[in-house]
Image (cartoon, rainbow, N blue to C red; front, side):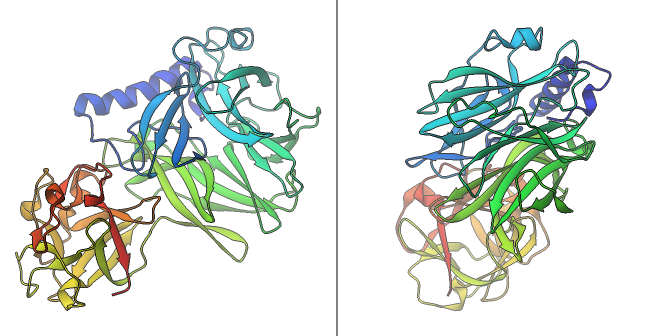
Length: 459
């Protein structure tokens, strides 16, 4: 959570700014529930998986807890501390704290989950602290008290905690704020507090914050934000990365990792998750299609020459067959591929009207065209209403012909039309779960049923 808004003003002002940003959208008409995150996600933690359920925690009263079974549709299920102002000890360090927590992060150590969280000042923005709570199930939490405190004279800030396990099995916390850069200290894996008094400034960049350390291939990669947050699409947040051979540095090769790419503005608070060998990063962004509303983005992380690469595009350009995961029938462009012919599902025969070319338009947005006739997958009348039928039409760059592709945890995909903001208003759907060959497809609000899950493979 950025401090620039707080220098010279109160932390309450920053909190108010965030609420005002959310209120603008609500007053304008609340957008539909977003794929890859509930509306209003800010400062998301790294994802944690227990069984078949994914968990993530975010800024909010009591620390907001969300879960998902597919990493696409997230539901708020509760909070760590509930309503109120949180653990009583916080008032000693941050007087007047109201219970709106920032930047939670979670890790597993010694058979328990440790939640680190930040509390920002109210009357004095430079009064900050990081606390810790423990749990065995991510539902019932026991607070463990103070870990970091910062005031006007501190050489470090007291926000944005993150945890990394090193090559030797030791755990390190990084934290820091816009004032003093990023710091690191080793953790005691029993108490969750610092092992000793040694604290190292690992990124001496004035406006660095929101760090995340990832160990890979003999290097420690420190991801962090520069710039300002909390002002919608005028925010200047950018995610950077540098690397070192030790958790405490020195870090070199500082480079921009994720910058704005409209409508993705102000990406921030990177998290990391390895799901059985598939690596993901998470971050929030301000949605340029929804007045800067904050949302969750889940992206693919790959490595090239021992440097991380963000891959927001889940499908490589090329021609594929697309089949429904439930009934096994293939996406089919009518019988001849002619304009306004219905797009249906049918038994796959390798006909040209069952082959689809995906062309990436940037940041996981695609044009999808039928190999027979070269016409685009199109929502009739350019509508985004539930039940809108799908047809073929010449590509004119309409948002009803552009699709945000969402990668589900089971390896299938959902295709959301961009004229719904790409936020899950409507996705390609088998109407009413009809398994008959020749059924015309439609759009429907995302619900996670098999009717909306598609397998993309070689034709």
